[in-house]
Length: 409
Image (cartoon, rainbow, N blue to C red; front, side, top):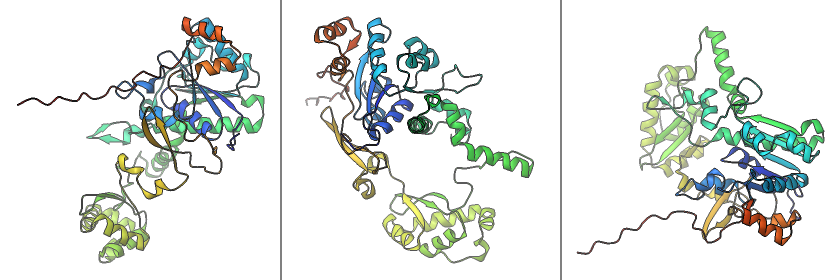
């Protein structure tokens, strides 16, 4: 038995893409057994990279078990019912209509298991859009994030699906709260992606309300750097990028000392620097460009200036801090090796199984069916009729790039 705080708990996941799989990834790292139910074609992230599993699948499905079922078949529904009757928690992000069609609503699961904790991550919570479908970029667009994030003047989504992952975090919090409360009324959890977006945008939403009432007009920050000169990305002499955090006058003073900029009383105050923004930005760019990254980092570190190098994703896991014990686990998947970041709560996570690979589609189908009480002949029949599917270990997961043959001559 592992030492994770959720050891002994069984979670059934009907998840696709990120929100629900991310929630159960957290709960799995805390010690729970996660049984991932997938349709015959597998969930979406299994086929996003050259026809095979994507980074999302590899990152958020480590150590889970895969049970591949046709939930539209009567036999598939029977298997699902047996599983729910024995589970502790259900987490899914099906659309409301799909949840009803597949028999995965709270009412359906509660009828099978009166003690089940049921968490539904959906597009919208209660309200006029409750039946509508929403995804991560829709949540960004509807809650103000996308309006401020632009490329060439065009509103665009953020790179990572942060709203999905925030919703997954909130779902994990809700499940843990329900377990802690032991209150039957807390077993039905509904979480909207849109409402998640509202909550994480609260600072900006209240900030614009504040300025509207003080200034008499709506005013948002013109940039993600809060219009503070010296707060942002700058290029060093050797072509590397550094991010500086200069929020106040003390930060500015330390930066000037570190880089040798003369103390200018006219720029000592933040309001002064904001009024002289173009001048200050030019000073910072020139100062940074006068040093190699390593030389500047040494000077800034000595003065206590907040900074870091802006790393490309292929370099992130090479950093000494990322390589320190307890940060990530190595796991193999289809003859490939990966280093996956772990939940950053080392005192709470499981002490075994962190190096578990994501499952192949239906990899655990036969074992789980046997555990549910099906005999060998019935399992064979279920596989034969397509109500359940098992993994094909010989299937090539990713299409390999074609190697051009050298042209003679």
